[in-house]
Length: 170
Image 1 (spheres, helix red, strand yellow):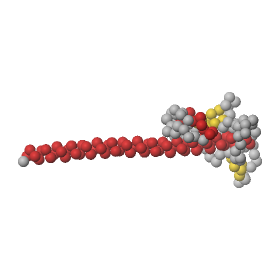
Image 2 (image 1 turned 180 degrees about the vertical axis):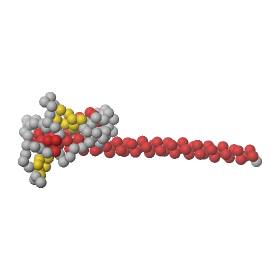
Image 3 (image 1 turned 90 degrees about the vertical axis):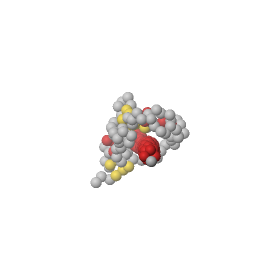
Image 4 (image 1 turned 135 degrees about the vertical axis):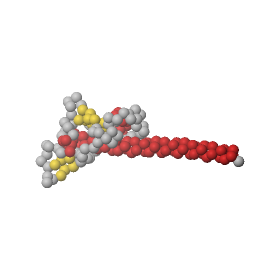
């Protein structure tokens, strides 16, 4: 009788160990899935925020007739106008790193775009809009450069009709 009781303890211990292993594996899978979902969400936010900067630089470029902004502050409040002219509503942080975007400057030091400083590998590899087709198969987010390049006047590509946001002074 005593020997049967000992065998049941071994079975119960084995069942508990198997349950702990299964719960650990399940928690690992859930954690990995959650991390993937969060990164994909941040990736979409990066595309949106980077595009906001690109559009603001494009707006500034069109209004100034072919000059890029010297700094980001002029995108939020353009000092060349009496009334408040905004090319962007507010400045955004890089959603991947939580820090400021890295500024991309041309040879004269003016800002042509922004990029992330993250070295994480993106999930999205294709299916980008035309202006971001070069993002396809990039190895890290830092290669996603949101740069405004003026259209070649000789091509038949229609220009966007975005205008800067104008507000009356308080």
